[in-house]
Length: 142
Length: 142
DNA sequence: TAAAATTAAATTGCGTACAATTTATTATAA
DNA sequence: TTATAATAAATTGTACGCAATTTAATTTTA
Image (cartoon, each protein chain N blue to C red):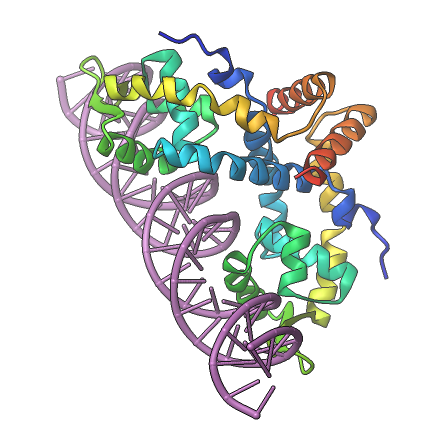
């Protein structure tokens, strides 16, 4: 008989991370529905609002996603006319993802979302900052 | 033209949460493969290692999952003989999930996993504790 | 320079996730 | 007490998420 306390759900660090992530993403849904975006499509657009164009590899590095997830997702964003997908002339292995005018226009509508979602996650400025730093410390260390 | 800094990926709190959760879950995979469990199946077994039996509704509350996710997952655990699924005699709407001997035996093998995964997530005791508390504060507030 | 190695996306296959709907059972109320 | 409401799972449909494999293009090397 083994008494491993570490195996209790409430002693795990990964579980609240997993649950918290899902619950917050769920909070985005009603706002993202208005833009016809899923959460993953939204963070993809966030990259493109900053970069204008990027290839799948680089995009995946920023979002911690691989081509298996990104290829179909990008095809959906293309179908919605928010991006274009073209092969690079210099190296045809690279697919260049570029934001369209319609995609850029989305940014204005999206601008209110962080504040709206943030307002339903009650957390002091200080704790939020510490949480942010700790999460990036973990991400950087792996 | 709008200059919404909150829309930058690196200013979001949800994104590192989402990325961190996925990356840590990925760290579990090699160890869980040895037990023929996915991460979601693993946290389900963790509940059953504490509870012995539970219905789908209660399980979903603990795991932040609904029957749409749990029903097929529980059928897989049943196929592996780690659990049994039977309707409650008192109220046939309830499905009783009960751990089997084989399921209980898994616990011994799983016991080492938290330490193994924890060792590759470098975080001070203090920061881990604070992270844990903050995540549960968020979960409790929503 | 032609074969081998590397690289970037795409594809395949499986397992979640979850909103919305349906089905079956139990509780409530007219 | 029977119609209505409420509840618990299951089902349906869409979208990830990722390991593993495949395909196509480019580099490297013998």
